[in-house]
Amino acid sequence: MSLKNKLKSNSLTIGSWITIGHPAIVDIMARAGFEWLVIDLEHTSIDLSQAHILISTIQANGMKALVRVSKNEEVIIKRILDMGADGIVVPMVKSKTDALEAIDYAKYPPIGKRGVGLFRAQKYGLGFDDYKEWVNNELVIIAQIEHIEAVHNIEEIITTEGIDGIIIGPYDLSGSMGYPGEYHREDVKEAVAKVLKICKEKNVPSGFHVIESDPAKLQERIAQGCTFLAYSLDFFFLGDCARKGMNTIQKDLAQ
Image 1 (cartoon, rainbow, N blue to C red):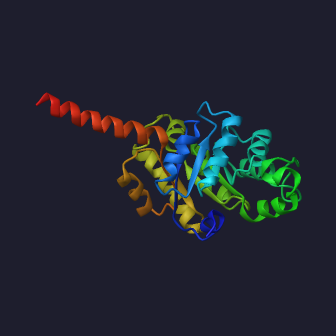
Image 2: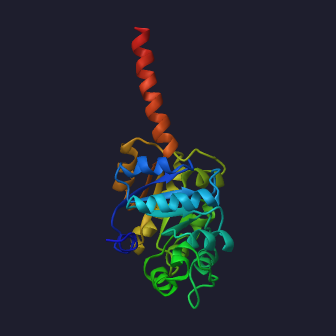
Image 3: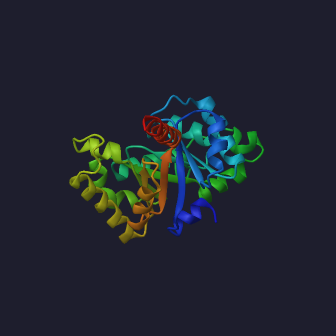
């Protein structure tokens, strides 16, 4: 089943986040069993040339390549999609207007307003007609819910035709409420619960970026009904394992 169809049927799908712009990171994480990886252009030093290579490497490893674009902006979205990305995660979607803009930038007329260019996605000019059909049937657009304004407008966002699902960004959501990073506060939890409740009522895939590498944290979100889940990110997997190992070694040496 394609990622698009999994989202349509609200089936569980688990991916992760790429912040280190080297294809070896993708090759390593591909062995873990993720279905998709998100290349982060918003908060990393990954540039467009690196993104192009990472998209190709992710797809060559049998996963879907999604990109969190730097902003909800026409040029960055069409350039990433022309590179052949399977979908985009659009940050700071706060309203139906924001959602419609993302769709306009990602889809060709008559649905959207995306300009036509020929690059990797269109097989360098040999497959534009096939790609047009693929965009309509398989392109994935995920709205990132990471501001309290988006929580207030969640129903109109998720019912916008063309939005395939949402993913909650806990750090910025808590920040928009005045408490950056304090996403375990009760009022932040209540905001998250509201989003999940309305997504469930509307049968729209709800997602969450589980920052911690502890699998129990992911399982908690599954129990809450989340079906589009990003499990931690590359540097936490690396760092947590290294710290755990060294802590054990240091404790043994201290005895």
